[in-house]
Length: 438
Image (cartoon, rainbow, N blue to C red; front, side, top):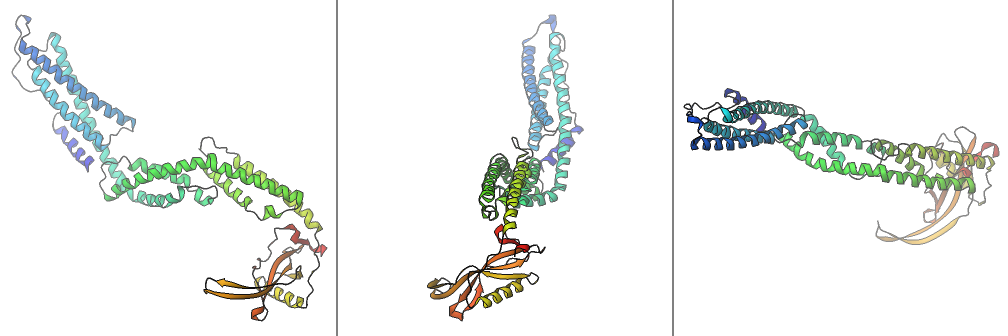
């Protein structure tokens, strides 16, 4: 509302002269024999004092307009108010100077005072016109801001919801989350630039947006700090550490046949995640190594290729070992395992069952937190392996599974390991046997 008041005030100004009209006084007395009277000396001194004040305040106004030119040519509402107040003071001092100059003839050495007055009055008129123009621009700008505030409210809601999750960035964040960082910074910066300088919000929405912007500005600074640290420290450290572990696991697989060190870990997955996050955040960050992610992923692929090559050599030599358990319940166990496999994967072909263990019985009393009572346990377990055909029919996959026999429930059979989905290729190459080797 303040800008609109200034605009109305400024619009009214052209009804009066932009520079104060000189008062209609009697003609100044003539100087006899070029003698300067004491009265004239006093008037000259007072006129100089008033003009000095005028020019000092004109300089203040000039600085405010110069500052506005550096910000796109428009003063803030607070600055417009200050200019209006200063121009009013200038008008008073000019009027006082005019009254004193009436008694000073515009001849000889005194003519310069009258010229100063005219120049200052013209400058006042120019600044009055500039104030009128700026007040109108400020009003137009606020009208445009109010028109777009509905869209900005939705943007602010989205940014506020994202803010909590972006204050702390992790190398293992999902790329979907990381992808919101740069848009968050971009849109937050725009809202800060639009609403932080706002001094004369007219609607409750605009007032609320200004308040929300204050909080958003702090969050933006935190996110930018986290963004830079992620690119210059956290992500490079994570990528290099994961790559180091992959190098060690790959070496163990190739040289010692320990494939599980690599296949059971999630290092390859986290390396891919970290590299994706690095690519999303690195552009525009000073000191970022734009080739880091590509080099790391290329090396990880080389390690995987080396391990796969070693695994193929192992697979080519694999044979199915005969069962070491030959108890009376072998047929029952085989039928049970084939049935649960068929129930879970009806389209998968079971080639056989192997038993590489003996029954191990365990009897104990265990406390149940659920029932708040002691419960007796009496069960035996045995390690088994189910041999299934691969989808392409070239290999047999050996899936380990443990069977339990509950002696308290009539030797009821059960398993505690879920059946893998049909076609699941074992990570351990020692569990993959060429069909030709069966």
